[in-house]
Length: 200
Image (cartoon, rainbow, N blue to C red; front, side):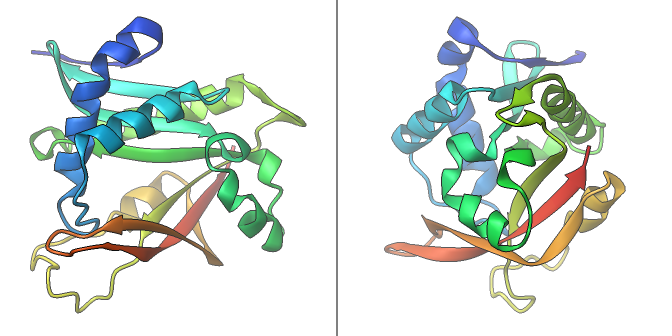
């Protein structure tokens, strides 16, 4: 069956929240995120993300089943906590449209869906205006794990080459933090998150 990729809004988004939450938990449980999440938190997180002004939620469906999702929103809206970090590194926060995540079930990878997720969000960022005019950059972050992490699979392949092919570059020192509970751990811990940026 053909995969369809489309933005979700309104009632369609609301009805899809449980599926989106389950998908995030499933995909992010794997290395390198090792995220031990809950459905309640995920549904709340996605609902708040979708409600942010200028936000986009894109879903990939195989028939009626959601097999992937990608999100984006203005940096100063949903992720205002990172605004000082960008400003400190000489990057105008108001110029940034931020990509929250792009998650896809393993069996659907390598078919161009990841590229489509970026295409949809970058096009959306170009289409909408920020408080100071058009967005001129997109950004996202990825968790940093040591190369000798005990749960790193032997066949693990970082996504850095894919991101660089899309035109993104790491910004030295532009590292924020997110906290979550790792699989097998009892409490949340802060994780370093490296930011990547692309000029639109």
